[in-house]
Image 1: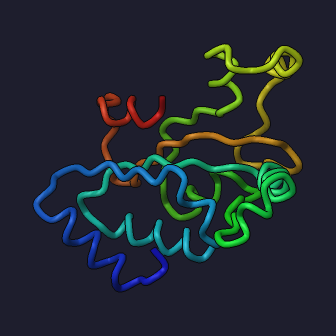
Image 2: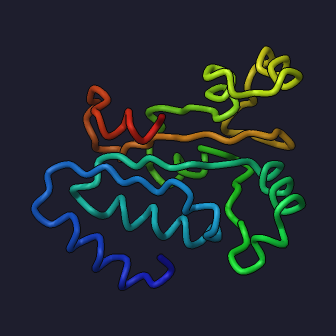
Length: 161
């Protein structure tokens, strides 16, 4: 992912002849630095067939918590990407947020939270564009600026579950 020419060649080859591509990078961005994510976002936007991108994102507070709790397990592949401006990071690169699914809310909805954490589900979510010290993570679908609004398809529904 960090070799720009290899990444661009892969994108060109894998999207050749496609009319509409959904890119799914679940579990990837956290391991890249800001510049690598910015470069990937630019390469995806430059690829005409790419219409949507489903990604996961977490706040700096979640990054810190994961580094403290799992740092020794992640020493070979440390987590790096956790923009304080959340989804605004991608909006500043021209992507439009289409869907946003906070993981804590999804866990609460699926009855997957321990008892005491269920109480926290009653509080509002932080602003996904100004995370500050909030512990927040989400799965987000962004669309390229020129992508016409569409009804969510099966691939998007599977990716967001």
